[in-house]
Image (cartoon, rainbow, N blue to C red; front, side, top):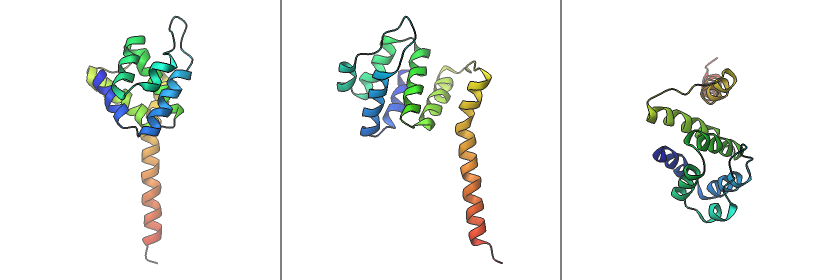
Length: 129
């Protein structure tokens, strides 16, 4: 679990990582959990942030909060990467609600859409009349 979290955090540039830490300190958490204090998060390295998440929350909830924070800083692809690789690391499938499944597949669908759009644009520009 720690490895997957670190892979995701390593993909962030420093400004993005600072924004993620800020979002993590602002996110509303479920009843029964405490928010990670801003102080330890501000000074934390990527390894320390992953460790703090896993210390404060159960694994699944830490992943959920990380997903919300990644989406909040407009890193949806990394959010999808996190879920996909965590499932692979566990060698299991997540049980997903239908609406959540659509959101998770939207990463793939948007990639397909962009690819088709790019190819169509290229084709129309290079088409010989």
